[in-house]
Image (tube, rainbow, N blue to C red; front, side):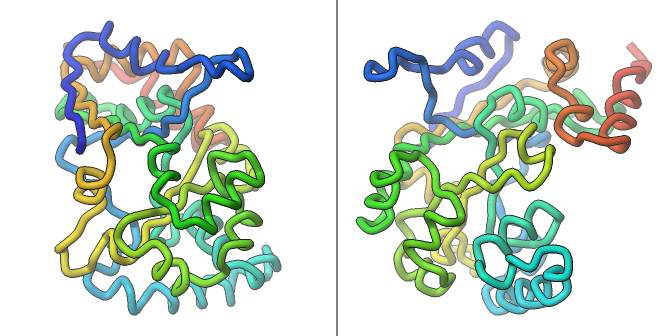
Length: 273
C-alpha cells in the first residue's frame, strides 16, 4: 500500500535525504529508493503516452515509435536495433512514451517538486514519490531476475533487457499487471547524468486506457514501501532556496544556456512578500 506523509516542517526532509542502510558486505551505506517530484499535489503518476493519446495509447504506441525511429535514425543509427533504446531516446527528447521518469537522488526529486515558474511557487502543495527498487524487482518474472542476479545489478541496462526480450508485446505478456522493469539509461548526455535518471517501463495492464487500472493503484496493491510525501506549500520557497544553495537547480539539471537562464530568472525573482 501507499503510505502518505505530510511534510510541514523543513526538518522533516532530513530522514528522506539521509535514507540509507548499511550494506554489511560492502561496509558502505546505500539506498534502493527512487524518487519522483511533481509540483502539483493533484497530479497523478501517468505516462506521457497516456496523457497524449488517452484511450488510443496502445494502438498508437507502435506508430509513434516507428515514425520516431524512421526520422531519428539519421542521428542515432542504433535506434533500429532496440525498442528499448527507442523508448529511452524518445522519452529524453519529449516523445510520448510508456516510460515514467525517476531519479536516484532525493534532492533531484525535490528540485522537480519545487520547479515551476517563480510566480507560481508556493501556490499549491507539491509531491515527492518514493519507490523501492528491490521490492519491485522481486516481483519480476524469473528470467528477468536471473539477468539482474547474473549482473549483480539493481536496474536493467538496454543490453540486459535485450537479453530478456526485444519485443514490447512479449514484455507486456511477461509483466501483465503485476510487475515492471526499472531501467538505467545510457549516459547519452550530461542532462541524464546530472539528473541521476532512471525509468520505469509501464506495461499495458498496469496503466489501462479504459482507466480501470492506474500506476498508483498498482503501487497501492502491490507494494509496501511506496511513500507519497505531500509537501506543504508554505515550505516550497524555503526548500527551493535550500536546493539552490546546494547547487541543485536548473543550471545543473538542464546544462546549457536554457537551464542557466531558467535558474537566473528564478534566483533573482522578487517576491511580493
